[in-house]
Each structure stands twice: as structure tokens, then as C-alpha cells.
Amino acid sequence: MENNASTIEMLFERAEDYTRTTVELAKLNAVDKTADVLSSLLSRLTVSIVFVLFAFLANIGLSLWLGELLGKVYYGFFIVSSLYLIVAIVLYFFKDQWLKMPISNFIIVKMLKKS
Image (cartoon, rainbow, N blue to C red; front, side, top):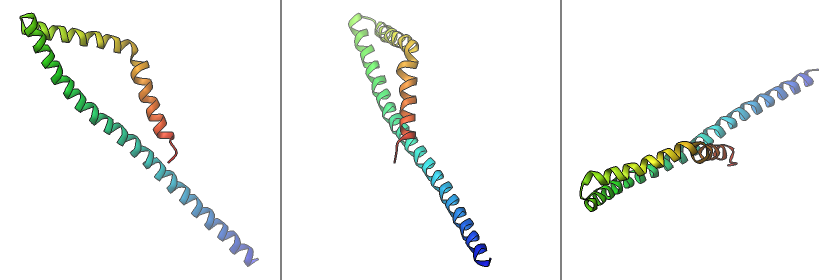
């Protein structure tokens, strides 16, 4: 009888160890996935910020150049800002298709990626 009791105790200890290990593995997998997604998003954000700064300065140069060609500096700024208004309107109508879905798919792929 004592042998059966010690066998059951060992079984419970192993089950307990297995459960702790499984929970710890799930935590580590969650941390790994979160770190992967955040590092990917932050690296893309950094590249995007540098690109935006480049585009900002290029737009100022383009505006000044167009203004010089047209005789009034502010004409160039009106033309460039009008182009951005058109781009903003197009993006507004296609935001789900061009922005939301690709970003959602990127996050899902990163979260479901096997390590």
C-alpha cells in the first residue's frame, strides 16, 4: 500500500513539474513573439522617420524651385501642398486596403511565426 502511495505522489510531482514547465514555456514564447513584433515595428518606424525627414527637406527644395520657376515662392508651396492633398484623399479612400490590412497581416505573421 505504501508503494502505491509513493507512486501516486511521484506522479503528482511530475504532473506539477510538467505544468510549471509548460506555463514557463508559454510565458517565454509570448515574450519572444512580443519582442519580435515590437523590434520589427520599431525598426520600420525608425526607417520611416528618416525617410519622412528626407521627404520633408526634398519637398521644401522642390517648393522653392517651383516657386522660383513660377516667379513667386509661395506658388511652389501651393503646388506641392495640393499634390499632398490629392495623395491624402486617395489614401483616405484606400486606407483599409493599403494600410490597415498589410499592417494587420504583418503582425499576425510575426505572432504566428514558428521560432
